[in-house]
Length: 137
Image (cartoon, rainbow, N blue to C red; front, side):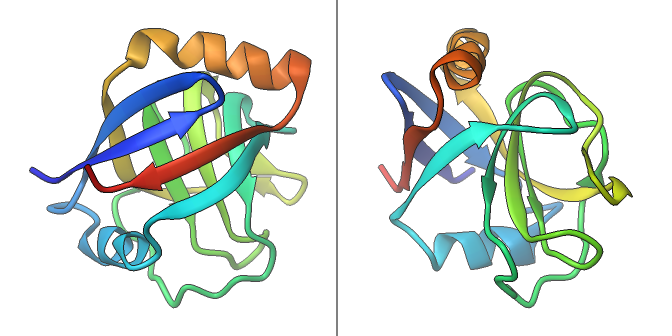
């Protein structure tokens, strides 16, 4: 089991790569580490935060994809009918865009710090974009 450290706003998390079910997505994301960006609140999906990646083509297929991530699950949408993005569910989510329902590759699951996911989501909602950093321990 491979773990990753995530710092988002003032919060820290550990997450597990879903290497068995999303091996290509995990390998591609690992090749981007350390990864720094800003996380903003979702517009369409519910209780989630996202990192918009525009027209970035990561060359990924759909694998282990879902439209209904559980709190603490990260999805990577490889693009197609909407822009490429990373989504983190902190509550109820039906992954969607202005184009309609989407499905993204579930590639990370928070295993430590999940008790702070709602606080992070509300901070992003009410106070705006927060820095987020993914790095190997």
